[in-house]
Length: 174
Image 1 (cartoon, rainbow, N blue to C red):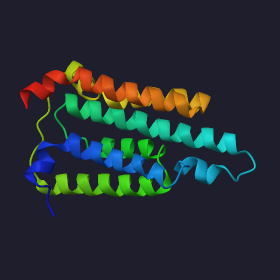
Image 2: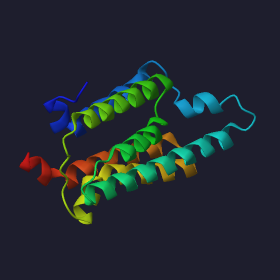
Image 3: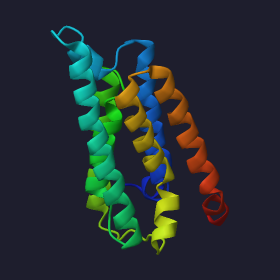
Image 4: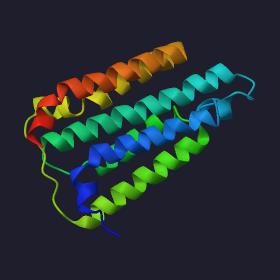
């Protein structure tokens, strides 16, 4: 069960489709996975904030590992999985399951392929290529402090658009 050439060449697209599928489940379940488990506790805001802080730490570790791996020409699989778990905390339970299962399967298939991934060299390029992850980290920091959905939604869209903008030259080379 190896990744196809399409999956290998368009890893970001496949990842973004899974992110979209995960968030699309808000149409059937309006509560994110963290609120689903924290709302019935004796201190729901404390639990919610604590769980989002854990998710923020996972995103920070994932973004760091992915950036370091990209700068040092190594695969980013562990970083991508940690990042996905942190990002999945913003999704409803069905979306979280779909997203984590999909990311795990994608990473497993890429590892089975056995090809060495080629990355751009240099830390500047690595940070530019991982702009979205760092923007989502900022989003999660703000959200963990404020617990206001509108802040998270706005900053997440800005992060995604910034990632597209900073990586436009990359699209031209494909």
